[in-house]
Length: 299
Image (cartoon, rainbow, N blue to C red; front, top):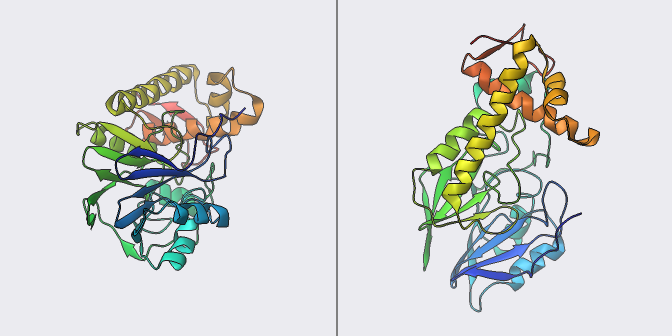
């Protein structure tokens, strides 16, 4: 059962509107949040899917006299980026992001992709490429706002968050309604934990996520995400005391209350942890690292 969709558009803060895309699902909650920022010069973050009705709603939400000067994409999943270039054609504005769909992948994830491993979850927008690349720390400014790009890989290698003063448009790195999906080879748990810890270094007042309500206690939420992952890690290491095992077997052992239909996602989650643990020399695959590998504890 999906939650009811709140009013859309909605003003969340001075100069910040949210328009929700009509793509609700168990992966996207009530749909993708598109953010419209500014009054005269306007920035749009995550136009979502290439849905004509949603693009119409974004344009209808423009402040009187406002015009789009920048379209920013947090990452190249199908529920976030396909609408970017479709919107750009309508409003004649450039599209910015960290890079194309496969940018920012670690060497380990590049190797897994070369083996033929494909991503899970929301699906990858393989046609996405920005008009302009934004480096970590780069700023885009309008007449009454300045957005700073923060490279936050983990959910996806090309994931950017965008800071507006002490608020953060955090994409899918942090969500208030669930833990974030980390599905190799697009998602990388080592990067995810590093990105969460990096964000902890700033005194944020509020997060605006890619799905769901604003997060009013962002530092608490970051700590919860880190602790949640550390507990899962401990479960995996404890399960390996009994001997070598695969991601699939570990998922069935650990996720005992999970419906059978969701076990493939649980298996991907366990595999993400096993890749991270391998990189930290706490476990080792028997043979080449792959989803079918048997893993043993080394510490």
